[in-house]
Every structure is written in C-alpha cells, then in structure tokens.
Image (tube, rainbow, N blue to C red):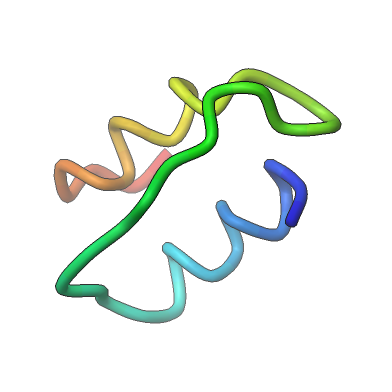
Length: 41
C-alpha cells in the first residue's frame, strides 16, 4: 500500500487497529499519524 492509498482509506473509514509501515513507497508513514489521531489533513 502507498501513502496516498492509506490517506484515502483513513479519510473514508475508521479502524480499530492499524499496523503502520514507516517506510512506504511514496512517503513517510509518520505522515499518517495526524489522521490516525482523528485529524483530517
């Protein structure tokens, strides 16, 4: 999965558990942390 695919999924759905890969093909997985915390960016 790519960073952009993950961002899209996080904006559309909620998840009980996320296993985050920090080295995604198109970016840094840490960029998803605000979305995981409930923010929408």
